[in-house]
Image (tube, rainbow, N blue to C red; front, side, top):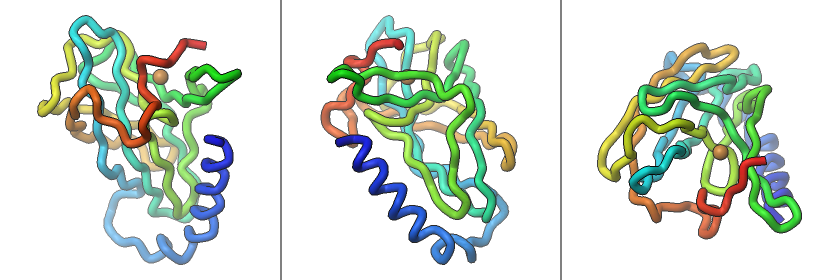
Length: 164
Ligand SMILES: [Cu+2]
């Protein structure tokens, strides 16, 4: 079901992409829209960051790495249901951002994984995150932290994930 909706979304993005984004102005090759992170409970060692990446160029780009002061390691992950169990894995080749299109990182799907949290993520606060793209280079953003229960997708909570 998730795969089907993902494919449907991709089809929509591919169909809409060239006309909708070809005229985009501005200086940034990648727009980082609505970044947010979920607040973490005391003692949690991991967290996740979500956002939409919009590619304003006619060339595919790729989110290849990320870093932040709040975590000792930051990885790009995806989640998927395997045999009825939500699992996640690192995207070692990065995450593609289609030419003139966008990709959304959200609970239950793609996310930027904070590993080895150096401080608790508290709702209402923010932290810096630097995203590295193959073409667009480094983009530094400020990530607002939302309440622990915050979600866009119902039951895709981090608590159900297993490391693959
Ligand atoms: Cu993850």
